[in-house]
Length: 363
Image (cartoon, rainbow, N blue to C red):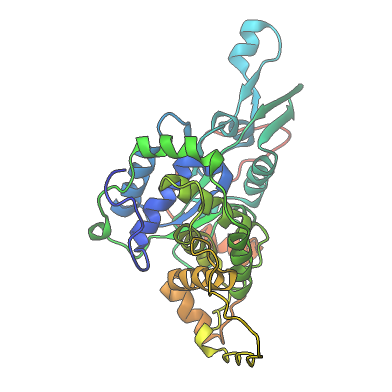
């Protein structure tokens, strides 16, 4: 493994988490759903995308432009092939082309709810079905989504239904080019980890720790603990381990659970200590840990929760504390918000569209 692949002691830096996220996406982005990346166009985002390109290898990587139409997204009638064959021929859409790889969704904060709903349906089914223009075709479409979020205001976010399916979330808007470190992983590391992933397994205590940490952080998504578990297995495979360690679980909590926190967890030091039970005659002292290789559930839950709490973005943690430890989960999809968003962001220019079914031009 190149660079500093092994987790450093203490809380990892934000760029370190970004490096790990790129490696997980290259390993199996579909297993995690993908990543919501909030960062303006610039050297930091370009550097992260370059790392992702370097790690993904031969897997397909398709860029989805803002305002993409249904025919390009899902597929439809291939006119040239239809004329050549004198029969209807289906053309593959962008999502089917990304099978086994990733989709980069540009300006995801301006994605329409309808487009997000179509992507979510394909993510859930791991396949795309097209029934239009006299065609009925299906194709496998197992991929991860990288939602590039360039929003500035708090209400400029990708659709909530899509983000809820993406296991990873990153906000690199506060980083500069000086925060970019040397590459932590190389393409051969991903290939080796992919071969090892099938045999990597967690212990039951780790699953319980993710559920407990999610509850303490106010994470309402039922997908989040499962995504954290999958991330922990992938991290173990990246580090060359067959058994998920507490370091893997802590990093997975920092990557998956911390960005979803809606409440500040109670400090373990604040809880009253339980009185030890009185000794009785004939009691024999028991060892603290009969198996030193196996973490006790309570200790592991504290480690995972502390790692997630330490990785909560500073601004979010301050907001949680200022509002009495809890903040309402962000909602998306209000009509007023979309009306405001239309006046912001980069100009995307004109694009070819479809005039069918009585549709009108939207000037």
